[in-house]
Image 1 (spheres, protein in one colour):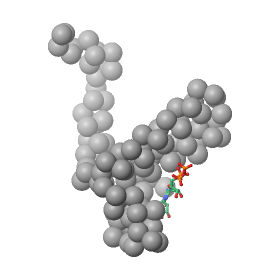
Image 2 (spheres, rainbow, N blue to C red):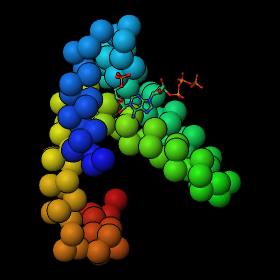
Image 3 (tube, rainbow, N blue to C red):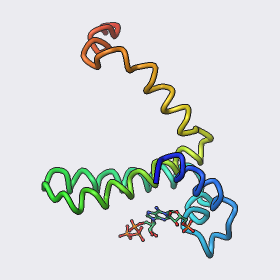
Image 4 (tube, rainbow, N blue to C red):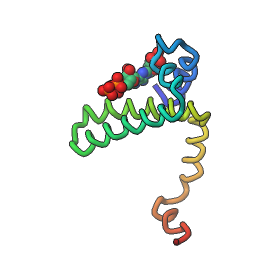
Length: 104
Ligand SMILES: N=c1c2ncn([C@@H]3O[C@H](COP(=O)(O)OP(=O)(O)OP(=O)(O)O)[C@@H](O)[C@H]3O)c2ncn1[C@@H]1O[C@H](COP(=O)(O)O)[C@@H](O)[C@H]1O
């Protein structure tokens, strides 16, 4: 399973009946609800990361990635666009980028 596969699954399920699909049900509630659900899942992953439970961190991270992609879908942002952004950053250290930001 790749993020591209998951993106395709979400796109396909978006038009399913909300009675039969969690993806469709969540998307029917709008981008704000998708964003809220992503935030909840992220917090659950943070809790497991702090506790150090690797098994639960793995399952919560799966929830985070799924709900991240649902949120992106709800706003028409593609995984490709996110990966392109990461590609553009690959020749620069995060510390160098931070130091180059305007002060203020
Ligand atoms: N990867 C996932 C996936 N991960 C999590 N979830 C669902 O996300 C929902 C939210 O999870 P929670 O445990 O947080 O549920 P909750 O009821 O809000 O729980 P509480 O917050 O109340 O405790 C649950 O219904 C999970 O089953 C997912 N639903 C779907 N997928 C993928 O999407 C495909 C299509 O699913 P449908 O859209 O449901 O057909 C599936 O075959 C999977 O590949």
